[in-house]
Image 1: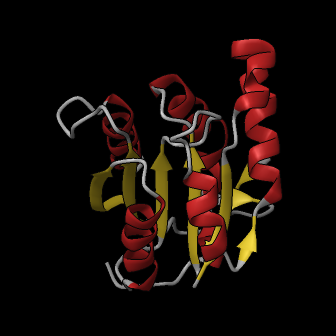
Image 2 (image 1 turned 180 degrees about the vertical axis):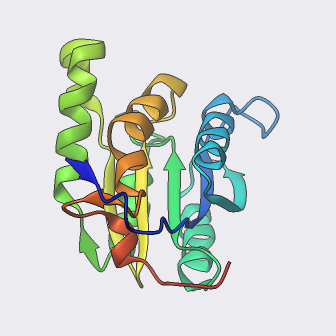
Length: 174
C-alpha cells in the first residue's frame, strides 16, 4: 500500500445519488458528506440527485450517468438494507458489466469494527458499467464515512499502488 509520488495525480468526475423516501437535498447529510469529501480530495462533482427508493427511478438516473461521458464514478447512498423499500442492489446489479466483489466484503469487515454483527444486513455493492465505477453504500452518514475513508478514497487516488480504479474509468478532459 503505497503511493507513487512521481506520478501526476488524475482527478475524476463523480456523481452522487441519494436514495431515500424521507430526505431532501437539504437534509441529506450522507450525500453532503460525500460531496465535501470528494471535493476535499480534488475530485469534481459531476452531478448530485436524490430519488425515492424506486428501482426504475434509480436505474433511470444511474443509466443516464453511465452513458454520460462527463461522469466517471457514481456513488449511491441508501437503499442497501433489508427493509421492504431497500432495492438499490436489485436496481443496479443488472447494470453492471463487472461486479467488484471485494467491495462489499471489505466494507462489511470495516463496518464490523463499528457496528458488530449488524453489518451482515448491509447489502452494499460495487461494479463497473461502461467504464464507470459505481459504489453503493448504506444511507447513514457513518456508513458513508466508512466506505469513503476505508475504501473509496484510496481507490480513486490514481497514485495509489499497486492498483486503483482510476485506471479503469474513462479518461475525459477536465
